[in-house]
Length: 285
Ligand code: SIN
Image 1 (cartoon, protein in one colour):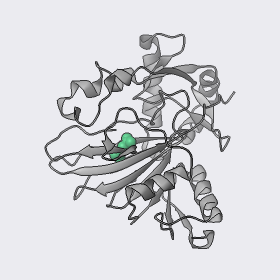
Image 2 (image 1 turned 45 degrees about the vertical axis):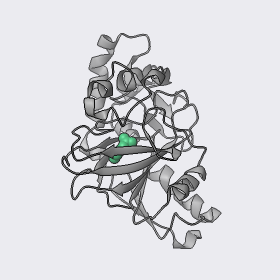
Image 3 (image 1 turned 90 degrees about the vertical axis):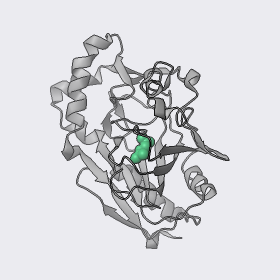
Image 4 (image 1 turned 30 degrees about the vertical axis):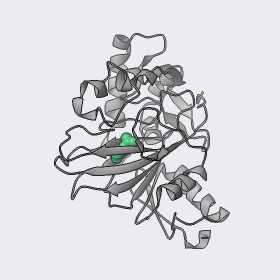
């Protein structure tokens, strides 16, 4: 499949692009891949519709980008440890990813991107929100941006996936999130990063995994983090994607946040997610 069939259509003013004219179950020519990669970098999240991929084809597409970064905590798809299952059954009330976050920010080299493929979706609801952290940063005053440039923040997996975590406290996530003993990561990243591929400056803190600023207590950090989160979650920096079975969203974890809505109780939603490896992220300053 060559670049001549690939069409890229902006999805919202803030971020996102819909890509059509591609069948991801087949090998992509280098020029088609380059076009898709550029759309990913330009728009922060790219969407594909009607992709009938086997798990092997999903894995092959992911490997075209980077080696796979296996998630330690999500239950994998049987027979495919590379694919994390994001599932909610009709009788379950909690979902996975139901709050603003960016995947794997608790890692030294956070995952570059996540490729989420919808297998089964509820009749309505279960949309995912995405937000551009570059736009959020650019809308802050120059004075606050200068202050943030001097800060680094601690990110952790412990309070989310560990023994005393939010997920551990919710009984019905027990079969979907596990390996709690592996939740030992604490890492420090710059609060404003320079995107390793685009060079764009991006705000890099998130409500799920950032616990405090380096050298500050959690209580001292909380008011400024809260202000940043309220600001970054403003609707004008975001878009909302409505899934169909066979839809794919591939988002850039260095440039965006996402939020899985939990508004479809009584219905099943099954998604397959592959995260691909990234590199350590440099400070903007
Ligand atoms: C996730 O947070 O990775 C899952 C997003 C979703 O299920 O929409």
